[in-house]
Amino acid sequence: MAQSIVSRSSITAQWRSLGSTASRPGGDSSVPGVFHLIGICFLSVGCVVAWRQGAFFTGGLDPVVALKALMQTVALVWAWLVSKRHGVRYPLGIRSLNFLFLILLISVLGALAGGNLMASVVIAVRIFMMALTIVLVMRSFSTAQTLLALCLCLALIGVVSSFTGLALGGGARLSGGIPPLSPNEISLLVGLPALVLLHEGLRARIHWWHLVLLALLVGLLFLSESRTALIGAAAAAGIMLLLVRRYPVQTVITALVGIPVMLYIALLTPALRNIVLRDDSASLLTLNSRTISWSVVLNYPLDSWERWIGSGLSMKTIEVEGQYWEEQVFDSSWISLLAQSGIAGTAIAVVWVLSCVMMVLSTAKLRTLFLPLLTFVLVRSFMENGLIDAGAMFLVFFVLSLSLERPSIAQSLDWQQCGTLKLGEAPAQEMRLK
View (cartoon, one colour):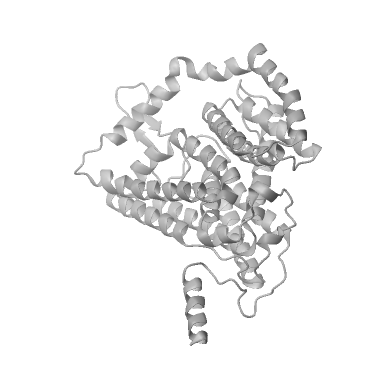
């Protein structure tokens, strides 16, 4: 009888997660090298950032599309080979994949109804490949290692793009050089790593070079003049400050030195004024142009298929009337979802996001870091595209979502008590699966 009970519980545990708590028979029980993780993350980020500005995928094939597809394929195969060799070291839940699959399926049905199937299917397959790559990576590496590797690659590409952009010269706002990232993309790539460094810095778990890197990333974030990113980062930082139980002496001393400097920059220099009153946003024309495209989507007839299942993931712009321009980008992940997957897909995305929020609020050991990071992503999603798309924002959101599922939470690091910035060392409490 006892053996029967143990057997049933074991079967149940395996059914609820992607893999068991032990490596597969025949799998190598050794720890995979961290260079695998960095390489896969670098390819995953590199193939989703913009390589050219103002271009959207419409189903055609050119060298950029082919090279990006090759990089994504290499990343997926690399992750699969690592997972196959080392077995399942960290089981994962299937909630995130289920939500994503339903949204992609609805968007494909919408594209089929709208006669724009090919481009939408290619984008859906690409997003699913990105998700599978992350799933395979997080079966072999801990959530902490995956998040830190992703932050490292985001910061590296963001800093390189920023410095090459400064070297090549540009407009008033910071724009990328190689790759040619937009200011909003740069703000995402540098903002997330900056928040992770800030979380550890508030608990005096960083070295001086981390502090220099934090100052560099924050500086690039301000130079991007992305107001949505700055609002999201400010909200995330505020949550971090509220969730600190006790400030170390080193943190208090650093704050006493840094606060006067920040006040001087904000009040006695034109930096803050330049962000609020950008040259390209006089009279809030940027927000006004966005609402024009939003109103078109929101006013779809209730008896139309576009209203309920959308028009496919390839729909990035919409025709507008009564303006001197003919098309307008949505510039909102939620309006994009409504246009691409309709009410059905958007409702699933809302449930997905709410499930992540509920999990992070109810999980004390992840709340101090993951709640601010989730806030940063969700604030951006209201005014920028990419939450469910082949982009860096989706990579970040999907890693956070997988980390907030029960199998991942059960073996996760307690970020309040013992966070880490060391990629090569998985914390002892995460090293359970051999």
